[in-house]
Every structure is written in C-alpha cells, then in structure tokens.
Image (cartoon, rainbow, N blue to C red; front, side):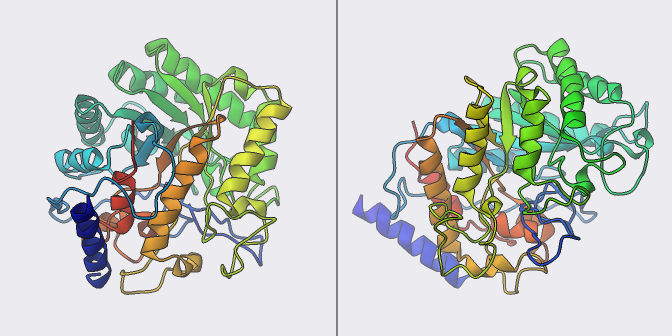
Length: 420
C-alpha cells in the first residue's frame, strides 16, 4: 500500500514538472458558461465543432495503472453507476478512448450529438458522424459502461435563422430525429438528454428564451425516444449557470428551471439535467460562505457547485416532485497549470485553480453529492478535449488529459475514487 501511494505521488510530481465557463460579472452583454458543449469562443459549455483535417494520431495512453486511492480523499465509497465523464468523439481512436474510460472506472460515458452535423440536409444523414458514435456505443456497452447522448443544435435548414444555434421551427423534426437515434441504438443507449443550456441566447437563437417552449420541445423529443426504445431514460436539458438574467442573452438558471417545473417538465422526463459549475470556488464554498482566497466569481449563487445543487433540490421540494433526481450532466473545475500559457479571455478564473486543486475539488464534489439523495449520476466535463483543441481554448482547461495526451492529477483522482 505504501509503495502504491509513493508511486502515485511520484507520478503527480512528474506530471507537474512535465508539464462550462466564461461569465460576466461587470456586463450583461455576454453570456458566461462554464463548459464547452460549444464553440471555441463561447463559454466552456458549448460542444466544440472543430474537425481536425490532419491525419489522426491516437492520443497516447500511459500503461501505468493509477493508484487505488487519492491521498486527500477521505469520503465514502461511491457507486460506480453514479460516476461518468463526457468525451470528445469525432475521429478519435475509440478503443484507446474506451481503455481510458476503463482506467477511470466510470459507469457512464456521455457524448453530445450535434444534430446539424448528423443531418446536414433534410434527407441526408452523415454516416461518418454515426460511425464514431456507433463505435463508442458498441465498445462502451461491451465494457459495461452505460451511454448517455445529449442532442441539441438543430440543422440550419430547419431553423428560422442560421445565426448561432437554436431549436427547429417545426418541433416534430426533433421528434423524428430522436426516434431515428433511439431506433438505431435501442437497448444500447441508456439515457438521452434533450437539448443543452436552453436559457442562453446562443443555444436558443431564433425564438424567445422561454422555459415553456423548451418543455414542449422536450415533450416532442421524448415521444420520439419512447416510440423506439421505451426502456431508455429521458433527461431534461440543463440550464447554464451564468449569473445573468436580462431575458435576452440569458435567463437566470434558477428562474428558468422554476419555469420548466411550472410548465410540467416533471411529467415528461425521468430526471432533470443540471450544470453546477464552481468556477474557481471549492465545492465546499457557498455564496454565503465563500473562500476569500478566490479573487472572482463570488457575487452570485450560480457560481457555486453546492448552491446550485441545493437550490435545484429546494425547487423540486417546492413543486412536490419526488422520485426523480437531478442528473449532473456537466460539472468540473478548469485549470491551465502546465499548459504553458494563460487561459483565454473569459476564463481567467482558471488561473486560480491548480491541477492539484482541480483533482481534489473533483473528488470532494463526488463525495458531497453522494450524500444528497436528490442527486443522481454525475458526468464530469471532460475527458479529452485538450488533445483535440489544444491549449488556446477554455474547454481544454477542464480536460482530464493535457494537450499532449498525458494524464493530469484529476485523471488519477477519479480513477482512485473507491467505487462499488
């Protein structure tokens, strides 16, 4: 046991030597979002659509097995089925990717489907995109890892405007696409998250921001899923935590989630998506009791991991909703330590998080939520965006891998969590 701990510490030391979130505190004209399900210039919540044109090189996979415990972890043994991670999928080496998922010991893997890339024309579907997803679904299932797919970003031909991203003008098109996905992956995809951060202008452009409209889109999409695969779970889109409530660029996530509940989303889904990013705030910090050493993003509850999950849980209680949990479909802490450059504009808070803190905060977040019965599976953002996007983009700061493909301390931290 002592030898393993020493090996782990040496690996961390060598990692240091080797080296969902843009937010606005001073202006309400930009939309802060902690992660990337997104474009490189948007908050880390947009899914990057960068498509490498050069020859694909497999991300290096270290052969050393992580130690079974992390030196700072003192929490409970966790349920593997509540631990997941989101991946960048396009043109990656899927066997190597699944090998990393197995090293992490996760029970879930999440991938985002950009609808516009999978169906670029009304009667045309991209087999290249489906091939990547087919491989992940098959190999994850073979490894006993459940798959979640998040589906957003309507094709330009289906929308009232081609600017930014948003829903289709005809919601039935979403039903048709979701039914096609569920037919293709019947019995293989365990859960579908319907849309992404719909309280942001850049994710819901073309129509007014409206939680009731989002619930209608989810209802239609859920019909498509259940028509093809009644056993698949349906999870509602997670609002972005932004600290903004101007009604145009963003609606405050608590206000928006309340609107979703008022519009009856609980009667449509099996769980509720949530993105409790912490910026540079430790998971134990709260808006009422912040860490005074953190220099920014302390002026709103939406910047705190714990506040977000507790506030959403209180809303479920207020609406009398029982038996359905919050699904953390994105969360994490970004760090640019060892990247050799400062974080990009909008992500300066990552300079206040070291790689070691990133690891310790992630472990602590899993441990905290383990004791909260209203919280279900948690999908960490993200495994492998850094090797594909490089150090210039904020999405990379959240990655469990460095841009050169080597494992960061947070990779070892997740792999070392004691799991059932």
